[in-house]
Image (cartoon, rainbow, N blue to C red):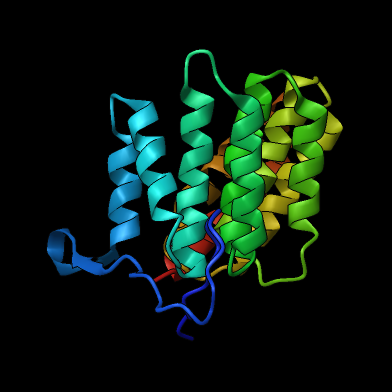
Length: 225
């Protein structure tokens, strides 16, 4: 479905006023079409001057953007605030929350949560990070590769606490989700989950589980186009 432009910037737009220009589409490498917002995000994240990148994103958000573009702009803004020296974690979280509020679907929200988790870990807040992941995974929307990635992150957090039981459960849930996906994109993250489970099963001597998991991942890889 086509997303309709929405006023999601910090400036209020009077609906009786002529609409401001939304960022247009451009051709990327290989002829793929990317919005100007996506080009701006790429440029800002690769910029040496983080404040300049933030400024350009703020300017873009003062005109109507589609939910998709606005989400990506706010996410990039959050990343840039977190990368500043010293990091501005408060403004980073505010940007992430704005992105979550305009995200068009659960997949976009999960992408933001992945960024939030890394920023929370930088601040030494693993408990809040786990809550964010669990809330995101409970969303009723269709699962995606991002669901598997979040499940793997949850397992990583449990491993950092030396909670092997919960880590194994998180990885196994992520594995089950990944095996239900048919996209080729899921193959890479499935192998990463498999590597973590291989370590856990090998350490506990659970050869039966290890063989079963290895066979399932291999079968998925052969069946995926």
